[in-house]
Amino acid sequence: MTAHRRRWPLVPTLVTLAALPALVGLGAWQLQRAQWKDGLLATYRENAGRPLATPTHRRELEALGFRRVQLVGLACAPRPDRVVAGRDRAGRPGWTALFRCRWPRERPDAGDILVNAGWAPHPQRARKASAPSASAIGVLVPGRGAQPPLLVLEAARAPLAPSAAPTLDIIPNNHRGYALQWFSFAAILAIVYVAYLRRWRQGR
Image 1: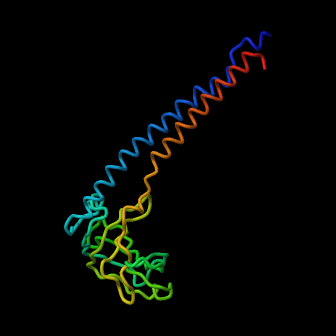
Image 2: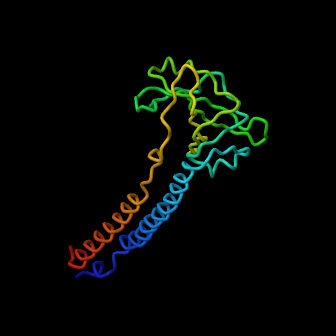
Image 3: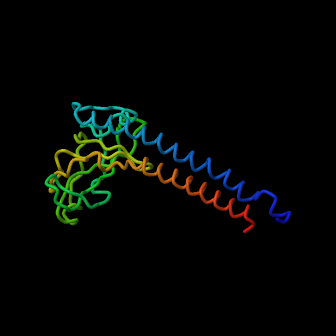
């Protein structure tokens, strides 16, 4: 065996030593995220059976996901911000009107709230929905990322019908699957490195 083959394969080894802990760490982080998501979903399930809440501060909304709430002091645009695909309470596909509102309008910490004002079979009808009143009751869906919270009204605004109530199915919970992927990548990397090392020792 020549001298350069007797030296340890430095670059592949360094790459493996750097990548392997990172992949395992990402898998462990996803498992932690899965535990956090399980607790969050458990809280949301409990909220669904709790009585009507009447928050007055925006910071209260974080603990009210999927609970019936009454928001007093909404200030909404006169026309829908956008019309998106949705379903009514019977499960029929159609279109829902989303209004962008400010709440609580009388406080300096007011922020955006999206309000699902109801469902229509055609987008043209959904665009004709009237703005939600200053006091609205519905189910609160927490915002994701930069998306503001969503209030799905119990009583639709004319000429719409009530939209389907939100369910926990709309919240993704794929962290364990992601963890398995990262651990699989780590295992594959280890196998490839060991196979490479065996070939290197054989002088290939």
